[in-house]
Length: 76
Image 1 (cartoon, rainbow, N blue to C red):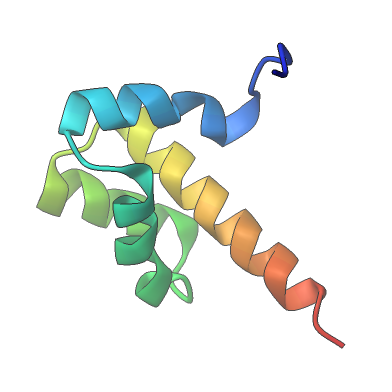
Image 2 (cartoon, helix red, strand yellow):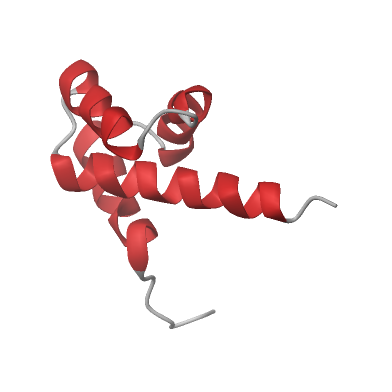
């Protein structure tokens, strides 16, 4: 078992799940189709449409966009 502390956007995930009652993957799946939009536009959408707090919305978007960028960069 790893005792390394989670850092960055993923450190918000337990709180997001507890606060909003949805698994993080569900939020990431909702964000994915919007990943071509600017970061803050997606954050605004999460805040207005789903009532997420700014920090939680920002963490989800940052994580999803970084993952997408990493996935795209890994392709030949």
